[in-house]
Image 1 (cartoon, rainbow, N blue to C red):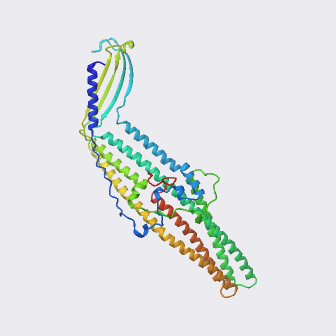
Image 2: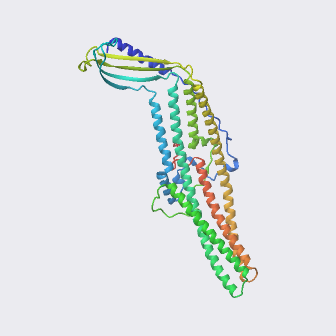
Length: 480
């Protein structure tokens, strides 16, 4: 390369560098909307048992103590097909971001060309000689000087979409863990209710046998026999319905885990689940840090801002550069001889004139998507705040309902004993015994349902507070 060419290329490099450094961004300032929620939770609902734990730092293995449930969650995280779709989506968006990031840098290609040809002798400016040409060059096909930040904003938008998609994948993982836990707890409830219904049916079938024998001996009326038959048939129908619900719930669990993990530890009862119930709500603003779905909304809002900047830059002149440097010779053996060097530098300035409103429509579209992102963010923040408040309120009232139902079941058991005793002594009719048995069975079923509801609410509160992102408890000061 001669001194003149070297001097010229140095000037070109300095100009490119200066324009690149001077590039500006036309995107709006990134100001997150003020969350439309109160600064604190209701005083009564926010009170948590001591010591209150931060849900975001409690790993799901520490929250769920049942080894069988832990194995099922492991299987779901490894084999759930919907989660695999979410992971693949993250890989897809990551690749799109890498493509967009690469467009900020000049692409460099190597090119080799051999030209052979023959034209008629009367062709102007060429003559009848054979055409022979050998070329070897390094090319910069087309590089946009991002003076207005258009390409940089497109890269920021792609990065924001990648981060939002990754946070959405984390949010799905948390929801999947909670759904597996809810399904498992429902199965424990159904198993306990089936055991209750099975034992109740045995007792009622025995009572029916005794009532039939007493009727045959004339010791009781036909009405008492028919009432006992009705109660027994109703229990059979309830038991069949519970088995149907249990089968449907097992099918759902098999779908959630993807592949059944084989031999599992024996399940614990609802009373032995050991689910953490001392979660503290913290402040509503903590949700913005702990919930992946809200962080995804924030990333999408940043991406919407970047797209506005790219749309604004489309109104301004665009400068692109095309360049090449190499050698050219008619003979292959002279390709690297002295005086065969060649270079090309083609700057291009494109100024928008008439596009029939296309650029304006693109800018309006970018602003509309930003408004949508803001509204979605505020809506999701309000939804998250409501979920936590609902969980805190339910934790208080469900505990009271469980205590009340324990008291009711104990009272109904005593009532059944008294009714049976008084019936044996001839003090009351058999209908009193049947009514007491029916009430006891109903309240026992309600108690099991309410115990499961209390555990399910704890799981939902754990998810609403951003729990489930880590497997093991994080030490104080560690980042999530």
